[in-house]
Length: 213
Image (cartoon, rainbow, N blue to C red; front, side):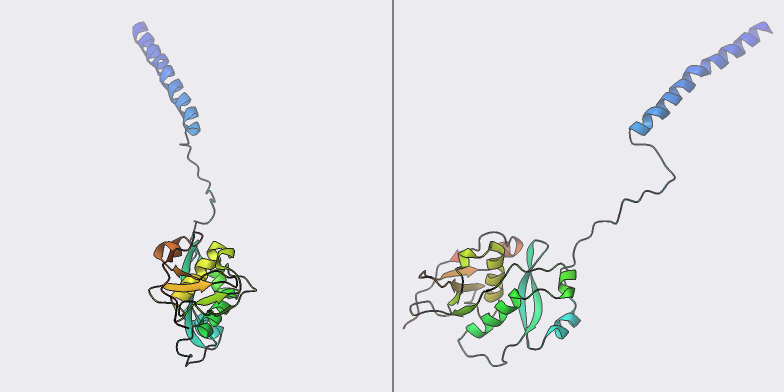
């Protein structure tokens, strides 16, 4: 009987180290980030991306005119936006100035409420206007009231892609631009890389021979 009691005591005392180890482990676990809790944790809303898309209803109600496309900044890239510009249905054949003027005005205008809500913005600021080329300039040259190189890289990228993708362009996604100074115009190209990184330098390609006087 005495031996059985001693054995029972030995068994009970043998549990002590095991219980202590479990208790120590339960203290260490919270420090390892394994603590569980029944209290809900509010980590805030999940991150979301701007849609960079405007409904067709906004395009039709924004203004009167014919459909045009302008390139605005959204999500650090250039995205084409449909708008309506007050252009005559029958444009002067071979004269890109009316179209370029209307598009430049669209670029200078602040985005509409729905465009801002979709994440759109513009880097093109006034005063800025566009006229035709001078004698000796290549055919289809457009001259801005400021030197293209004096504009911010993003603003110039918007103008290049908007003009190049319209009837004001010189073909092959290019546009010939100059400024008010006595500098030869340059042919700028709207590339995929420029649309993805509008803050980069707009690429240029060789300018064709000047038009005949």
